[in-house]
Amino acid sequence: MTIFGPDISSYQSGLSLSRLTDASFVIAKTTEGTYYTDADYQTWRTQAAQLGKPFFWYHFLSGESATAQAQHTAANVGDSSLPGMLDAEPAGSFSPSLDQILAYIDAAHAAGLNLRLLYLPQWYWAQIGSPGLSAVANRGVSLVSSVYPGGSGGPANIYPGDGAAGWQPYGGMTPLIYQFTNQASDGGQPLDYNAFRGTASDLISALNPGTGTPSPSEDDDMPAFATGEVATGAGAVTIVLPPPANIGSAGWGNVWFSLGADFGTAHVRVAIFTHGEGWSHIYQDVVVDAAADRVNPFGGPLPSGVQKISVARRANPDTPLAYLIEATHR
Image 1 (cartoon, one colour):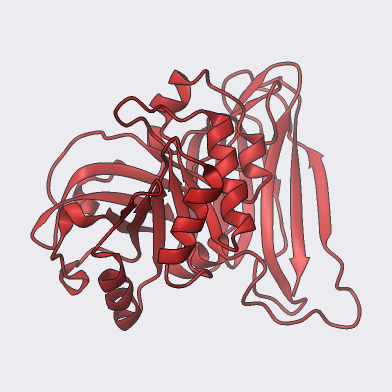
Image 2 (cartoon, rainbow, N blue to C red):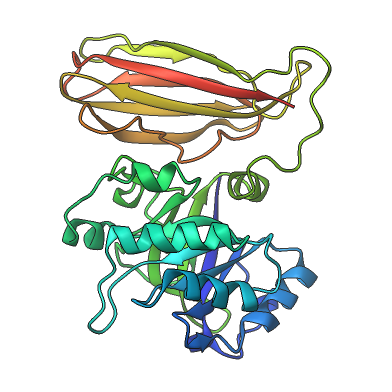
Protein backbone atom coordinates (compact mmCIF):
# COMPACT_ATOMS: atom_id res chain seq x y z
CA MET A 1 0.00 0.00 0.00
CA THR A 2 0.97 3.66 -0.34
CA ILE A 3 0.22 6.34 2.25
CA PHE A 4 0.27 10.13 1.99
CA GLY A 5 1.28 13.03 4.22
CA PRO A 6 1.71 16.80 3.84
CA ASP A 7 4.71 18.94 4.68
CA ILE A 8 3.59 22.22 6.23
CA SER A 9 4.93 25.47 7.62
CA SER A 10 3.56 28.80 8.79
CA TYR A 11 2.46 29.42 5.20
CA GLN A 12 -0.43 27.20 6.30
CA SER A 13 -0.86 28.99 9.63
CA GLY A 14 -4.15 28.10 11.30
CA LEU A 15 -4.47 24.74 9.57
CA SER A 16 -6.07 22.14 11.84
CA LEU A 17 -4.61 18.67 11.35
CA SER A 18 -7.99 17.20 12.28
CA ARG A 19 -9.32 18.52 8.96
CA LEU A 20 -6.80 16.58 6.89
CA THR A 21 -8.70 13.60 5.51
CA ASP A 22 -5.80 12.10 3.52
CA ALA A 23 -2.89 12.52 5.93
CA SER A 24 -1.37 9.34 7.37
CA PHE A 25 1.69 11.31 8.58
CA VAL A 26 2.74 14.97 8.89
CA ILE A 27 6.06 16.75 8.27
CA ALA A 28 6.25 20.27 9.76
CA LYS A 29 8.88 22.98 9.56
CA THR A 30 10.53 23.82 12.86
CA THR A 31 13.53 26.02 12.01
CA GLU A 32 15.45 27.77 9.25
CA GLY A 33 19.09 28.74 9.56
CA THR A 34 19.78 30.17 13.01
CA TYR A 35 17.34 33.04 12.60
CA TYR A 36 13.86 31.54 12.29
CA THR A 37 11.56 29.35 14.37
CA ASP A 38 8.21 28.35 12.92
CA ALA A 39 5.45 29.74 15.16
CA ASP A 40 2.97 26.97 14.30
CA TYR A 41 5.25 23.96 14.76
CA GLN A 42 4.52 23.23 18.42
CA THR A 43 0.76 23.49 17.88
CA TRP A 44 0.94 20.96 15.07
CA ARG A 45 3.19 18.68 17.11
CA THR A 46 0.56 18.65 19.86
CA GLN A 47 -2.29 18.09 17.40
CA ALA A 48 -0.49 15.18 15.74
CA ALA A 49 0.09 13.53 19.12
CA GLN A 50 -3.58 13.92 19.99
CA LEU A 51 -4.60 12.41 16.63
CA GLY A 52 -2.05 9.59 16.85
CA LYS A 53 -0.41 10.55 13.54
CA PRO A 54 3.31 10.03 12.94
CA PHE A 55 4.92 13.48 13.08
CA PHE A 56 8.31 14.59 11.74
CA TRP A 57 10.12 17.93 11.76
CA TYR A 58 12.18 19.63 9.08
CA HIS A 59 14.91 22.27 9.05
CA PHE A 60 15.59 24.57 6.08
CA LEU A 61 19.33 24.82 5.49
CA SER A 62 21.15 28.17 5.32
CA GLY A 63 24.79 29.04 4.73
CA GLU A 64 25.50 29.66 8.42
CA SER A 65 27.48 27.44 10.76
CA ALA A 66 26.16 23.89 10.64
CA THR A 67 26.74 23.48 14.37
CA ALA A 68 24.85 26.67 15.19
CA GLN A 69 21.95 25.62 12.97
CA ALA A 70 21.74 22.17 14.54
CA GLN A 71 21.77 23.68 18.02
CA HIS A 72 18.97 26.04 16.96
CA THR A 73 16.93 23.08 15.74
CA ALA A 74 17.62 21.06 18.90
CA ALA A 75 16.45 23.96 21.05
CA ASN A 76 13.13 24.16 19.23
CA VAL A 77 12.20 20.65 18.07
CA GLY A 78 10.57 19.80 21.41
CA ASP A 79 11.42 16.08 21.34
CA SER A 80 14.86 15.02 20.10
CA SER A 81 13.60 11.48 19.41
CA LEU A 82 11.25 12.71 16.68
CA PRO A 83 12.55 11.86 13.20
CA GLY A 84 13.59 14.90 11.20
CA MET A 85 14.31 16.02 7.65
CA LEU A 86 16.86 18.45 6.23
CA ASP A 87 15.46 20.62 3.44
CA ALA A 88 18.38 21.39 1.09
CA GLU A 89 17.48 23.61 -1.86
CA PRO A 90 18.51 27.05 -3.13
CA ALA A 91 17.00 30.19 -1.61
CA GLY A 92 17.96 33.71 -2.55
CA SER A 93 21.72 33.86 -3.11
CA PHE A 94 22.41 30.64 -1.17
CA SER A 95 22.80 27.31 -2.94
CA PRO A 96 23.82 24.51 -0.56
CA SER A 97 26.69 22.23 -1.51
CA LEU A 98 26.93 18.54 -0.64
CA ASP A 99 29.63 19.39 1.90
CA GLN A 100 27.29 21.84 3.64
CA ILE A 101 24.52 19.24 3.63
CA LEU A 102 26.79 16.63 5.20
CA ALA A 103 28.05 19.16 7.75
CA TYR A 104 24.52 19.81 9.00
CA ILE A 105 23.70 16.08 9.11
CA ASP A 106 26.81 15.47 11.22
CA ALA A 107 26.08 18.45 13.47
CA ALA A 108 22.45 17.35 13.93
CA HIS A 109 23.49 13.85 14.94
CA ALA A 110 26.12 15.28 17.30
CA ALA A 111 23.38 17.41 18.87
CA GLY A 112 21.30 14.29 19.55
CA LEU A 113 18.75 14.90 16.80
CA ASN A 114 17.13 11.97 15.01
CA LEU A 115 17.76 13.36 11.52
CA ARG A 116 16.74 10.61 9.06
CA LEU A 117 15.63 12.32 5.84
CA LEU A 118 17.19 14.61 3.22
CA TYR A 119 14.97 16.55 0.85
CA LEU A 120 17.31 16.99 -2.12
CA PRO A 121 15.18 17.15 -5.29
CA GLN A 122 16.72 15.57 -8.36
CA TRP A 123 16.66 18.82 -10.33
CA TYR A 124 18.84 20.51 -7.70
CA TRP A 125 21.05 17.43 -7.26
CA ALA A 126 21.77 17.73 -11.01
CA GLN A 127 22.58 21.44 -10.61
CA ILE A 128 25.30 20.70 -8.07
CA GLY A 129 26.97 18.18 -10.35
CA SER A 130 25.02 14.95 -9.76
CA PRO A 131 27.26 13.80 -6.90
CA GLY A 132 27.19 10.32 -5.44
CA LEU A 133 25.15 10.25 -2.25
CA SER A 134 26.73 7.26 -0.53
CA ALA A 135 27.99 9.59 2.24
CA VAL A 136 24.36 10.49 2.95
CA ALA A 137 23.19 6.88 3.02
CA ASN A 138 26.15 5.86 5.20
CA ARG A 139 24.96 8.36 7.81
CA GLY A 140 21.59 6.59 8.09
CA VAL A 141 19.74 9.29 6.16
CA SER A 142 17.19 8.46 3.45
CA LEU A 143 16.31 10.49 0.37
CA VAL A 144 13.17 12.55 -0.30
CA SER A 145 12.56 13.47 -3.95
CA SER A 146 10.11 15.76 -5.71
CA VAL A 147 8.56 15.63 -9.18
CA TYR A 148 5.22 17.31 -9.82
CA PRO A 149 3.26 15.63 -12.63
CA GLY A 150 0.34 18.07 -12.36
CA GLY A 151 -3.30 17.44 -11.61
CA SER A 152 -5.78 18.72 -9.06
CA GLY A 153 -7.93 17.45 -6.24
CA GLY A 154 -7.06 15.24 -3.31
CA PRO A 155 -3.66 13.56 -2.95
CA ALA A 156 -4.92 10.17 -4.12
CA ASN A 157 -6.25 11.77 -7.31
CA ILE A 158 -2.94 13.50 -8.11
CA TYR A 159 -0.53 10.72 -7.10
CA PRO A 160 1.01 9.32 -10.32
CA GLY A 161 1.57 5.81 -8.98
CA ASP A 162 4.30 3.66 -7.47
CA GLY A 163 6.20 3.49 -10.76
CA ALA A 164 6.40 7.28 -11.20
CA ALA A 165 9.58 9.17 -12.06
CA GLY A 166 9.84 10.50 -8.52
CA TRP A 167 10.68 7.02 -7.26
CA GLN A 168 13.65 6.50 -9.58
CA PRO A 169 17.12 6.31 -7.96
CA TYR A 170 19.72 9.05 -8.28
CA GLY A 171 23.10 9.50 -6.69
CA GLY A 172 23.03 5.80 -5.80
CA MET A 173 19.97 6.20 -3.56
CA THR A 174 16.30 5.37 -4.08
CA PRO A 175 13.86 7.87 -2.52
CA LEU A 176 12.13 6.70 0.63
CA ILE A 177 9.53 9.48 0.32
CA TYR A 178 8.33 11.21 -2.85
CA GLN A 179 6.83 14.74 -2.82
CA PHE A 180 4.50 14.62 -5.80
CA THR A 181 2.52 17.87 -5.61
CA ASN A 182 2.28 21.31 -4.05
CA GLN A 183 -1.36 21.73 -4.99
CA ALA A 184 -3.24 18.93 -3.22
CA SER A 185 -6.62 19.94 -1.83
CA ASP A 186 -6.96 18.94 1.82
CA GLY A 187 -7.95 20.80 4.94
CA GLY A 188 -9.31 23.74 2.96
CA GLN A 189 -6.10 24.88 1.26
CA PRO A 190 -3.48 23.70 -1.24
CA LEU A 191 -0.69 21.66 0.33
CA ASP A 192 2.57 19.93 -0.54
CA TYR A 193 1.87 16.19 -0.35
CA ASN A 194 4.27 13.27 -0.08
CA ALA A 195 3.94 9.53 -0.66
CA PHE A 196 5.49 6.57 1.16
CA ARG A 197 5.26 3.04 -0.22
CA GLY A 198 4.27 1.06 2.85
CA THR A 199 2.24 1.38 6.04
CA ALA A 200 2.55 4.00 8.75
CA SER A 201 4.31 1.42 10.94
CA ASP A 202 6.75 0.69 8.09
CA LEU A 203 7.55 4.41 7.88
CA ILE A 204 8.09 4.68 11.62
CA SER A 205 10.42 1.67 11.51
CA ALA A 206 12.38 3.13 8.59
CA LEU A 207 12.90 6.43 10.44
CA ASN A 208 13.64 4.91 13.83
CA PRO A 209 16.11 2.12 13.08
CA GLY A 210 16.95 -0.18 15.93
CA THR A 211 13.90 0.71 18.01
CA GLY A 212 10.71 -1.04 18.85
CA THR A 213 12.02 -4.62 18.67
CA PRO A 214 12.42 -7.14 21.48
CA SER A 215 15.82 -8.07 22.87
CA PRO A 216 17.69 -10.84 21.05
CA SER A 217 17.30 -14.41 22.23
CA GLU A 218 20.26 -16.21 23.77
CA ASP A 219 21.17 -18.00 20.55
CA ASP A 220 20.86 -17.43 16.82
CA ASP A 221 20.80 -13.68 17.37
CA MET A 222 23.48 -12.62 14.91
CA PRO A 223 22.56 -10.56 11.82
CA ALA A 224 22.14 -12.74 8.73
CA PHE A 225 22.84 -12.06 5.08
CA ALA A 226 22.58 -13.88 1.78
CA THR A 227 23.75 -12.96 -1.68
CA GLY A 228 23.27 -14.39 -5.14
CA GLU A 229 23.32 -13.65 -8.85
CA VAL A 230 20.41 -12.32 -10.88
CA ALA A 231 19.86 -14.42 -14.00
CA THR A 232 20.95 -12.83 -17.28
CA GLY A 233 19.06 -12.73 -20.57
CA ALA A 234 16.16 -10.77 -22.01
CA GLY A 235 13.11 -11.13 -19.77
CA ALA A 236 14.90 -13.43 -17.30
CA VAL A 237 13.29 -13.50 -13.86
CA THR A 238 14.97 -14.29 -10.53
CA ILE A 239 12.80 -15.04 -7.50
CA VAL A 240 14.37 -14.32 -4.11
CA LEU A 241 12.86 -15.62 -0.84
CA PRO A 242 13.97 -13.38 2.05
CA PRO A 243 13.16 -13.89 5.74
CA PRO A 244 9.66 -12.53 6.51
CA ALA A 245 10.38 -9.09 7.93
CA ASN A 246 9.18 -8.55 11.51
CA ILE A 247 7.08 -11.73 11.68
CA GLY A 248 7.55 -15.49 11.78
CA SER A 249 8.57 -18.10 14.33
CA ALA A 250 12.28 -17.44 13.79
CA GLY A 251 11.82 -13.92 15.17
CA TRP A 252 13.21 -11.90 12.26
CA GLY A 253 13.28 -8.12 12.53
CA ASN A 254 13.99 -5.63 9.75
CA VAL A 255 15.14 -6.99 6.39
CA TRP A 256 16.97 -5.02 3.68
CA PHE A 257 17.33 -5.84 -0.02
CA SER A 258 19.79 -4.28 -2.46
CA LEU A 259 21.24 -4.79 -5.94
CA GLY A 260 24.73 -4.21 -7.35
CA ALA A 261 26.02 -4.27 -10.95
CA ASP A 262 29.31 -4.43 -12.83
CA PHE A 263 30.39 -3.82 -16.44
CA GLY A 264 27.45 -1.54 -17.24
CA THR A 265 24.10 -0.25 -16.10
CA ALA A 266 21.37 -2.80 -15.44
CA HIS A 267 17.66 -2.04 -15.65
CA VAL A 268 15.27 -4.35 -13.81
CA ARG A 269 11.68 -4.55 -12.68
CA VAL A 270 11.46 -5.33 -8.95
CA ALA A 271 8.23 -6.56 -7.36
CA ILE A 272 7.72 -7.28 -3.66
CA PHE A 273 5.08 -9.70 -2.39
CA THR A 274 3.96 -9.15 1.22
CA HIS A 275 1.79 -11.36 3.40
CA GLY A 276 -1.88 -10.35 3.20
CA GLU A 277 -1.31 -7.76 0.47
CA GLY A 278 0.04 -9.68 -2.54
CA TRP A 279 2.32 -7.83 -4.95
CA SER A 280 2.14 -4.60 -2.97
CA HIS A 281 5.24 -2.80 -4.29
CA ILE A 282 6.20 -2.86 -7.97
CA TYR A 283 9.09 -0.74 -9.30
CA GLN A 284 9.01 -0.85 -13.08
CA ASP A 285 12.51 0.44 -13.88
CA VAL A 286 15.16 0.18 -11.18
CA VAL A 287 18.49 1.47 -12.49
CA VAL A 288 21.64 -0.16 -11.06
CA ASP A 289 24.85 1.52 -12.24
CA ALA A 290 28.19 -0.29 -12.11
CA ALA A 291 29.88 3.03 -11.27
CA ALA A 292 27.67 3.65 -8.23
CA ASP A 293 26.91 2.00 -4.88
CA ARG A 294 24.37 -0.73 -4.33
CA VAL A 295 20.75 0.30 -4.93
CA ASN A 296 17.95 -0.40 -2.46
CA PRO A 297 14.73 -0.24 -4.55
CA PHE A 298 12.56 0.25 -1.48
CA GLY A 299 14.77 2.94 0.04
CA GLY A 300 14.67 1.40 3.53
CA PRO A 301 13.66 -1.82 5.30
CA LEU A 302 11.30 -4.12 3.45
CA PRO A 303 7.62 -4.08 4.46
CA SER A 304 6.61 -6.30 7.36
CA GLY A 305 5.71 -9.80 6.21
CA VAL A 306 7.61 -9.71 2.92
CA GLN A 307 7.43 -13.18 1.35
CA LYS A 308 9.18 -12.99 -2.01
CA ILE A 309 10.93 -10.61 -4.38
CA SER A 310 10.82 -10.87 -8.17
CA VAL A 311 13.66 -9.32 -10.20
CA ALA A 312 12.98 -9.23 -13.96
CA ARG A 313 15.54 -8.11 -16.55
CA ARG A 314 14.75 -5.09 -18.72
CA ALA A 315 17.31 -3.00 -20.63
CA ASN A 316 20.91 -4.29 -20.76
CA PRO A 317 19.81 -7.80 -19.68
CA ASP A 318 23.31 -9.30 -19.74
CA THR A 319 24.96 -6.81 -17.34
CA PRO A 320 26.25 -8.81 -14.35
CA LEU A 321 23.97 -8.19 -11.39
CA ALA A 322 23.80 -9.55 -7.85
CA TYR A 323 21.44 -9.15 -4.91
CA LEU A 324 22.11 -8.88 -1.18
CA ILE A 325 19.68 -9.63 1.65
CA GLU A 326 20.47 -8.39 5.16
CA ALA A 327 18.28 -9.36 8.12
CA THR A 328 18.35 -8.84 11.87
CA HIS A 329 17.12 -11.20 14.54
CA ARG A 330 14.80 -9.61 17.07
